[in-house]
Length: 449
Image (cartoon, rainbow, N blue to C red; front, side):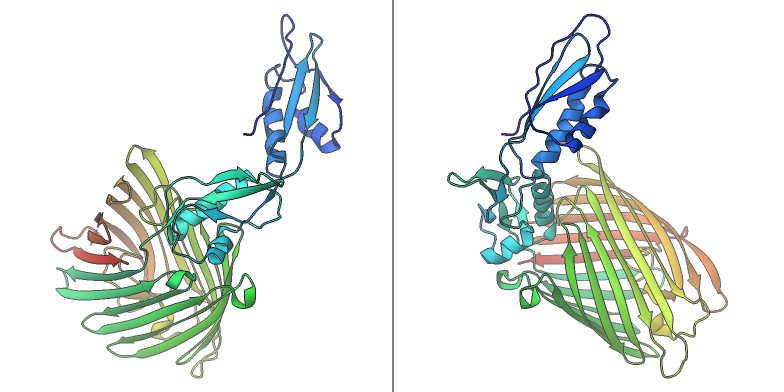
């Protein structure tokens, strides 16, 4: 149990800290931290003391304490006792995680032998909860090794049914078109942190198949190998593309990746950065997600143009009260230079639940776009989510007669219901003041295993 003991003697009249006198061993850093209490009311020095204690607690000194006594002359006498430093032992899990124990320990990012930090442990617990492989049944705990000055971090992570088979069917009454998506995702294969995803899309005049595979911690390092690619076809063209790259976590929230790719008529190199601080994987209630990428496309045989393709997307969940939550989201992308000679598959493909919700999936292509989104959600734990959303945005149209910047306003409602290892998703979206009967309705069915 971490604690600090304070003793104070008050004088009569106005009570302030005029000077500070130290007793016992201390550093210049300690003096600088406590000097902020000079001239403040007599109780305010305790806030400075708490900051100093937390500093040492997060550097291994869990039993650090600071005692102080303020006399009638305004002289504060303080004494710091840091105690002995503590280090981490191997992390343990109280539930059945479904992962190999060494895999689980690497995922926690807790390094045995490193100085203990309660803040680091809290961030590790949040990362494990948002990873998707586990359900957190209780907050992480710290237990003292009875023999050595080590702290054993004990997690409560239960194996989650996170692999999924998902089918989404959408219908646009305005265009009278049906579209289908099928997604199969295998996460944490056999408890090894390997991931494999396959996704297929089909419409009247377009088809797309894409996939991705992650091999974690190659050669015992912190780097992962990722292979991914797609085959895309519409009524007039075909395109195939593959990428190979490496990625790694930076701290508890960031992931960086570097990739090289080759397609039917181009070669690319790219840099990606993501940030995730969500409180959980399924139906998050708080936290932030960010994904950004920069792709350099080298000259094609039919063009001398090199060009840069940059995009970013973020979302932020903020609890309001009770089961009410808000989500603020936004995305933007652009291709530079703006006069580069491009073919159809070089452009961004927009439309569907991942971008402009009021459009058909991959409804149109553009050189540049941007949008924001505000959503009000009512969520009942892990089981039910009902939301209303509004998306103002714009995009660059490249085909006549609509060439130039076009405004977009999408809005609608969505519903998600989980029951055991099954979930149902419904959404209805409209765009730009359409008639209420001309929107897009989508129905999704997912099974977890």
